[in-house]
Length: 82
Image 1 (cartoon, helix red, strand yellow):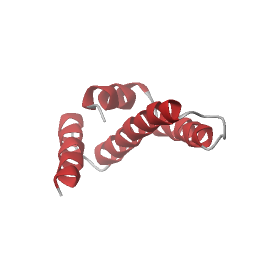
Image 2 (image 1 turned 90 degrees about the vertical axis):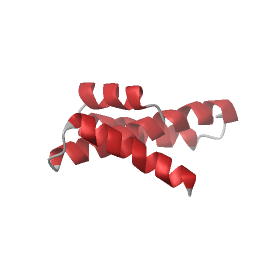
Image 3 (image 1 turned 45 degrees about the vertical axis):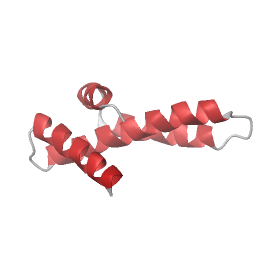
């Protein structure tokens, strides 16, 4: 997860576009010929897209972009510490 990447994805893509991309990446990971390295890269991309979708939802619920990004980062870091 990289907050600058999530911010860029949030700012330049609609939730619908992000969801469509997410579906493609998830399907890609299910192909039999995909290597572990490719799955790792796709997994990182999936994580960042999910983060951008969550930030979109927070902003739609009334949060300021900066606060939504910080809240998401804290949420992820908090779940890692557990």
